[in-house]
Amino acid sequence: MNYDVIIAGGGTAGCACAYIAGKLGLKVLLVEKNSFLGGTITSSLVIPAMKTSDNAINIEFFNKLYSELELLGGAITYCDGNKGWFNPELTKIVLDKLMQEANVEVLFESYITKTEKNLLPYTVTIESNNLYLYDNNILSHPIDTKYLVDATGDAIICKNLNCEFLENKSQPINLRFIISGVNVQEFSNWIMELDKDRDVTTSCTVDNKIYLSTAYTWDKSKNWALRSVFEQGITDGIITEEDSNYFQMFSVAGTPDSIAFNCPRLVKNCKNPYIEGRAAILRLSNFCKKYLPGFKNAYISSIASSLGIRVYNRVKGKYVYTVDDLRTGKQFDNPVVVSNYPIDVHSGKKDGSTLEQVNREYQLPLESLMVKDNLFVIGRCISADFESQAALRIIPSCFSMGEGLARYLAKDSVCG
Ligand SMILES: Cc1cc2nc3c(=O)[nH]c(=O)nc-3n(C[C@H](O)[C@H](O)[C@H](O)COP(=O)(O)OP(=O)(O)OC[C@H]3O[C@@H](n4cnc5c(N)ncnc54)[C@H](O)[C@@H]3O)c2cc1C
Image (tube, rainbow, N blue to C red; front, top):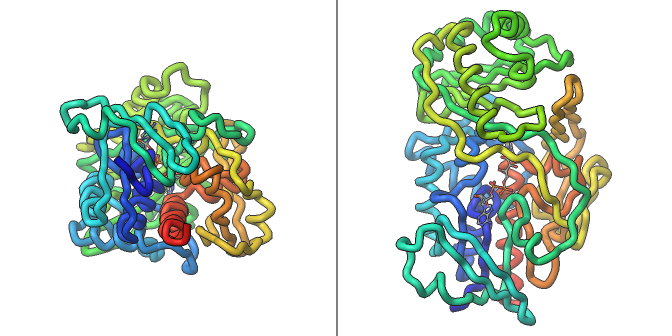
């Protein structure tokens, strides 16, 4: 059995790559370890996609996903013009549909367990945790592919192929959750009054529903409106000081009484981040119910099934993109991403996090996705140094990497 492209990882970058490659006529197999697509967006509940440059390139997939979600009431455009406010559950459904539309074959609960390189094709062996889902053809026989794409987020395929890696440096992980049953109008009235200088809080009405975002961190960099509330929660023993290190909330498109939380951010060396994360979620939920108007009848409706990993493995590819390239807006012959998102480095230490605005657009070249011999990497584990990755990892840029690579593969397969 032969494919033009096998993509390991049906997450943010992998779905964009699969959809565009399929649309451009390539025979694509997408291998995903979860039982649904979307990766960090769905399994780690990371929403919304951050706003990036108006001159962004390779945005067909983003626009298609947005318009399909909008039809289902699962995406909104926020008041700052950001179209990235997606509903994670509806995203799963829409991604299934998009893959079918693009003739992409999808294997869920599956892994590539063995990869061999025979001249140009790679030969992979795939196993599934759910054998009854698939006929034996695809699982029991090695499969050849001309191009192999590692979209696992953590460069698992590159690791198995003994590729070179860049220095290991990490940022804290989060375990995100959603609270439902919130009286958003009541909370919005209260927080907009409390955060009079609008330092961190925004709120807007879309389709007669209120959407909002606010935040608090233990850093002294801002005059956080919620500071006294957090101090009270710590004094009363409802939350720990560590729970207060990072707290951020966003409304969820299509579920007007739900708020998604970008926390807890796990700053200690956790022995078991899932157990400690879920315990922190319970404390934070109790905190919201006790101190935040509008949360009295609220309840935890969803806890991410996967940890949110900002950065882990980064592959050393044909070109290592650097923060100097980013700061100087270096131009390349084959850009796949154009962005202006800041360099967003989270730290577990008080006042250690930084958000460096960049005053010009920057480009990521295709060569940072090239590993070797028709092996490519997309998403947060690309060939980029630690600081530039901290700007490039956002959802829209991962989409653009996947799409940009797919366009290159479609051309290459015709020429070569
Ligand atoms: C806490 C947190 C908050 C963030 N906040 C924002 C934000 O507000 N806005 C924004 O735009 N960006 C945000 N980001 C960044 C962004 O969400 C991620 O960097 C991006 O989604 C990563 O995309 P990816 O394709 O690299 O990985 P993923 O989307 O995680 O995709 C990887 C996929 O590979 C699958 N996989 C892994 N191993 C295997 C294997 N061996 N075989 C098969 N499949 C495998 C996974 O299940 C997953 O589906 C945040 C990230 C984190 C962690």
